[in-house]
Length: 92
Picture 1 (tube, rainbow, N blue to C red):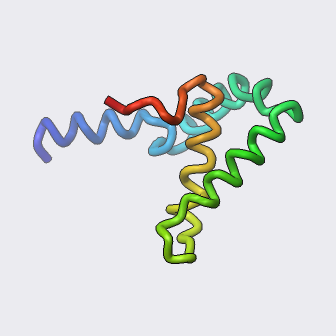
Picture 2 (cartoon, rainbow, N blue to C red):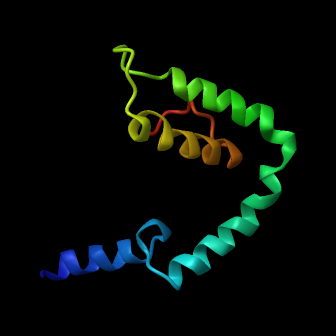
C-alpha cells in the first residue's frame, strides 16, 4: 500500500463511524454526553417536523429507499440543526 493510501486509511480509522471498539465506544460516549441535553422532550415537535420533511423528500416516483431517503438524512439533519447549521446554507 502506498504511503498516501496508508495515511488516508489511518485518518479514516480514527473517525467514530469507521472506528472499532474500544475507540468507537469511547467516542460515542463523548458524543452521548454532548448531545444528551439537546435530545429532551422539549425538542420532540422539532424532530417530528424534521422527520416529516425528510420523508417528503423523495425522487418523485412515489417509492422510497428507506436508508437513502430517510435513515441517513434524518439523523444527519437533526445533528446539523442541533449544531446550529441552517439546512439552506450553501456547502461551499
